Length: 511
Image (cartoon, rainbow, N blue to C red; front, side, top):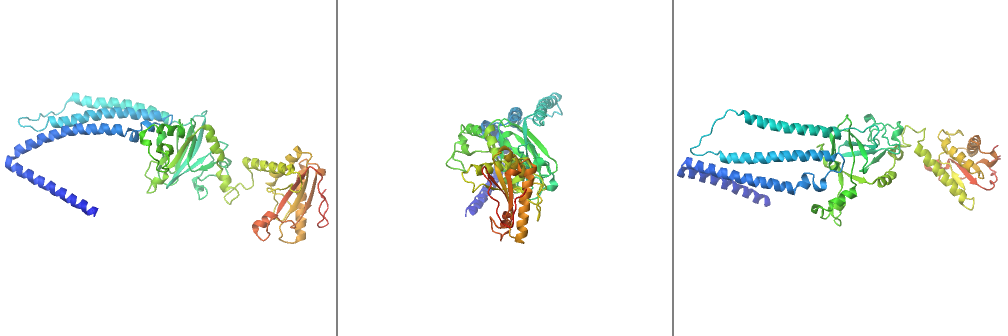
């Protein structure tokens, strides 16, 4: 129904225009064509003067009204060190172009009125005027020279890379249809090597896992940065052209497939400080769309967007940017987990199965020491058995795997620091195969661990070892997971006397 009404209104409007045109034609016939043309020309001149004033007023009024929304003033002042240069150049350009606009606007419509067609007046033909041509060529050229020189100076300052002695952190943003992947360095402060040929489902950046700098790199969903810290953003694209755009920080750089780019900036205000400033402006004193119980300024966020029309899902590339105080940032960073250790480590994609990383060594050492101390602190010795989770053997043999040495070395260091502690090594197997063979294998494995500790400097009188075969399961041998759990080596620790060795199958203490 509404569509029909709109169509009828349009038809009536066209009919009115046609009728006015017919009336004008009739007026010409009645008054004479020259008289009508002169009257129309005069009225058009008056209309142009009205438009001159009205358009100028509307332009200035809209500029004042929308200055915070569209021109970057008020709450939208730059939040980065280099942003002041960009805003300064924008302000200078704006002032010059506004002056030119006002002058040319007034002259355009005033001349249209003053030199309209009038009876008894004839236009003077002037082929050219050297003075005018010099003026309207020379003045713009001089102004443009200053603008270009100032712009180049600002460009060289803004687009410079970090120096060798600069204190900065580097992150990476990888654009694809339709999102951003974000990567942070770990404790080493360095981003690992990447190769686009390595990109796959569980490796969105194409990180080379043989480069140990990748071991502690972090993947995050939003940009979180410390205030007053120089940030170098490494910008890449996986598929089509994108654009890394941080409007509040005056950062804008293309993300080009196959051509890494970068941008360096320093945030100068935290998100809390920025929101507090927003609270002083009326346009932010409205209920928030995301949380109606709060004001808009309380939930406003700085943003990362794509400023290149990269496809119909372009809108979804928006992400939140949060700027924190240094101590708050460190707390946030400590909560993040290494992508490699949490996703790649121990999978088929891991090329480093035969080595441990420093973070893993430290974590396992702390875990072992905590478990050993906890066991010794209990008044009874019944629960003093520790499972050596990272001590393993070659399949079907008593030969220790290469990675087992890390936890065994931790055990040696612990026993050297606690000279009053005695230990018993216990070997266990699953129920697969012959029971006698399993018992023998478990005894040999326990004895092998004892020999390793002996070579590490632990007194033989403080250690015994025994095999238990498959007689003491801790899980169901009917499942692969259960059998894996039952194949284990245990370390019994005590500050008292070691228990007597169990009599299983004519067992004898290892010497």
